[in-house]
Length: 131
Image 1 (tube, helix red, strand yellow):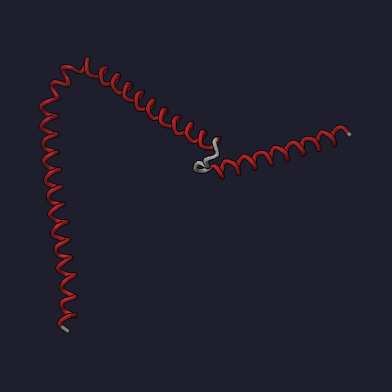
Image 2: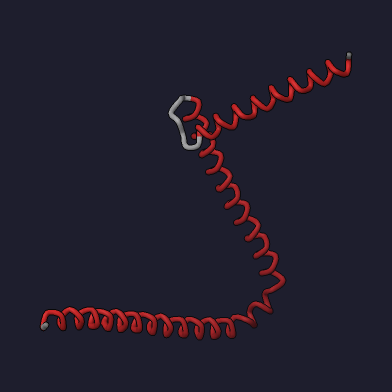
C-alpha cells in the first residue's frame, strides 16, 4: 500500500515541476517580448524624424536594395535548382537510379502508348474517310 501511494505522488511532483518550469519559461519570454516591444517603440519614436528628413533618399535606396536582394536570392535559387536538375539528369543517364526515376520511366511508357493509340486511331479515321 505504501508503494502504491509513492507511485501516485511521484507523477504529481513531476507534473508540478513541469508546470513550474513552463510557467517560468513562459513568463520570461513574455517579459522579454514586452521589453523588445518597448525598445522598438522608443527606437521608432527617435528615428521617425530622421526618416521624414531623409525619405527622398531612403525610399529609392530601399527600393533599389530590395530589388537587388530579390535578384540575388532568385538567381541563387535558380542556380541551385539548375545544379540539382543537372545532377539528377547525370545520375539518370549514367544509370545510378536517382529518386523518381521509376515514375519518369512509367510516365514515358504511358505517353508512348497513348501516342501509338492516337496514331492508330488517326490511321483508322483517315482510312475510313478515304473509303
